Amino acid sequence: MNYIKSKDWELPENFVTDERLFNERRKFLKLGAALAVSTAGVMDLAAKEFVPSPNLEYLKEPNLQKLTLNSYEQISSYNNFYEFSTNKKDVKPLAQNFKSAPWRITIDGLVERPIEIDMEKLMKKFPLEERIYRFRCVEGWSMVVPWVGFELSHLIKHVKPLSGAKYVRFVTLYDPEQFPDQKRSSFVALEYPYIEALRMDEAMNPLAFMATGLYGHTLPPQNGAPIRLTLPWKYGFKSIKSIVRITFTDSQPLNTWQKMAPKEYGFYANVNPHVDHPRWSQARERVLGKFLKQNTLMFNGYENDVAHMYKGMDLRKLF
Amino acid sequence: MLFVTEVEDPIKYIYSITGATALTLLYLTTSISMLKRAVNFIKYRRTVGWFSFFYACLHMLNFVILDMELDLALAIEETLEKPFIYLGNIAFLILLFMAITSQKSLFSKFYKYHKVIYVAILLTSIHFVMAQKALSVDQWIYLLIMGIIVIFKFLQRSKILNI
Image (cartoon, rainbow over all chains, first blue to last red):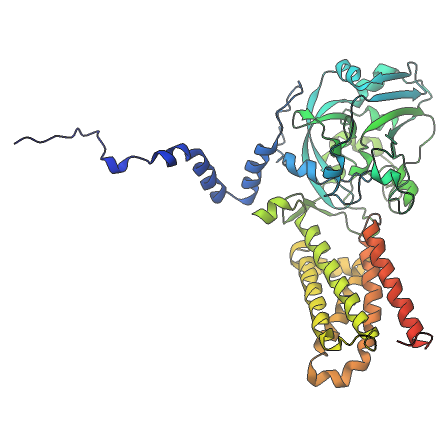
């Protein structure tokens, strides 16, 4: 009798995966993964898809604290940038035509070497590095952001402040043609240009960082392109965006929010779970993308690095 | 999943949507009362009021369940400490009272107390403004509507306006 003896490694025809399914297997795996893991996991997956390919060269941060990053999408679609709009979701669409190049920054005041420099040239002066920072908004929400940029202290050392320089004052661009809220004649959200300031020792703290990028890519306009400050131990409004001028002064400048509502916002604006905003609690925070809140940490978790600067100060009065 | 990935700050989002809806419906309820002689929509008034209360309930549940995470002691502490929160809670109690006494059997006895809705409107509007860091144009519009209602009511009561 003649019969075909199948070898023991042979599989029957009906075991063969359909070509269509075979070609779509990655999609299928992704779908399976998306269903299996938690929503946070799904968001990570979604996040990875939306990150623009990196265009900056920088030193990676190892993320030793193992902070869970917020997605590029979250960081770049939920923005407080009143020059565009007071609605956080409206900022991104309104910011798309923002011209952040060419961009000139003036550094003046009590410095040995006042300069006026193009953003492009400034970027080349300092090697870029990544900093994964917690970001806590005074409104009660927070996120974790992988910034790219350089330490503010590098820039300060470069311009050599004079001994009389006690404070550093930052100014955002004033351009009603580009910022719809600056163009308004009434119902303006804030007084412009936006101003923020730091005490000299705060500005020299290694945590104070000038960000020019996000997720390895040049900053999108809604996050403060082309250059912004990031101060992880202070409430977000201190981290001024789209900076055009940095001035060294001998007296304490009045920052925009303190001018607007001095009982609610101070000069320091250090993250402090024990000192509430007059209208709402600061003890806890809502991490973007999560339903459950978490405790806010003293100085937003950077106590060891910054607490010494505020020793002996009454943080309830100097909030 | 769509909801979670689209909304960055879910608790805040639920507050905004339910709060603004409840307030809008509250404005609508009083408008129906005030304009009843011009346009008679009085038969819908209770339904609109109930819907407003329904959204206020969702708003309150968001406060207790998601924001305070069912920690009632914390919820009470926050309420007593922050004017912004107790104004909202008082307004909620007023709406609760109105919702209960709007049943047919109770309404005849209690309708005269339903004027407290103007207190609720005032408190809710203040609560709404206090929740913002800075007022946007949309929020000014809410205040404008509230102003119109108050002025209208005043003129009506003092018989200057005969509608």
